[in-house]
Amino acid sequence: MLDDILAKIGRTKGNVYLPFTAAHIQEANNITHPDEGERQRFIQNRLQLIRQISDGYYLNFVMKVGEIRWFVEEPIEVLATISEVPLGENAMKMFVNLFSKDQKDQFRMSLGIAPKEINNYKPDEVIRHLNTKLTSLGAQSFIELVEYGMRPNQTSILGHRFILAEKIAAIFELLDMLGYWKDKHTSTSNYARFWDSNHVSYATACDYFICNDFRTRKKAQVVYGLFNIKTKVLNSDGLP
Image (tube, rainbow, N blue to C red; front, side):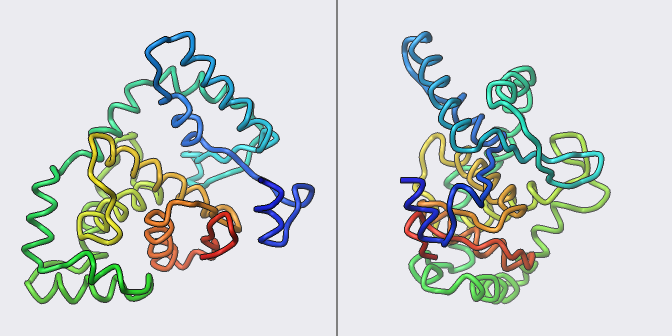
């Protein structure tokens, strides 16, 4: 399967790096099972798969320099690091649940935005369309709404100045709120979208972001266009 995906983008395992990130490890750690022993077995199997695919290449954000950098790490060691700071996960859940579904629906309706209409726009046209809707009612433009929440004097939930990953998370949330390829609402959809945005953030350090979630790909294309990021967005068939 992996060889087939690489072949479709003109690469082979020998000349490409397939890094993992903390998002992959967190998703593994979120595996559920009524029997804790079985849950741990599933987690270990996932970690082994991540190790096999990535060869230990690991992308991580280094706060001191404000950059995503490459490392070689064992997935199990990254899991141990994540497990040592459970408060971080709780803070992230709070961050992505600031607005209820009803609040989002009301906000979108007040702007007269129809999801089926906005989904017909190409990624590079979406922001222009949203700007027209927002400013026509006296609201801030899309990017101004994002920047308002990312003012230089503010710090993030992680205790440092807002970084690209958090801007991208905010953009994903705002796009979803405004109806652009919005996710089906569930009790965990906001949290899942946060990790989707996290994958998109780390992929800014890569040549390709390969994802079979169509809604995530569409949002990623908008994000990369906004920040002039050259990462190509594809599915596992090598298609946009």
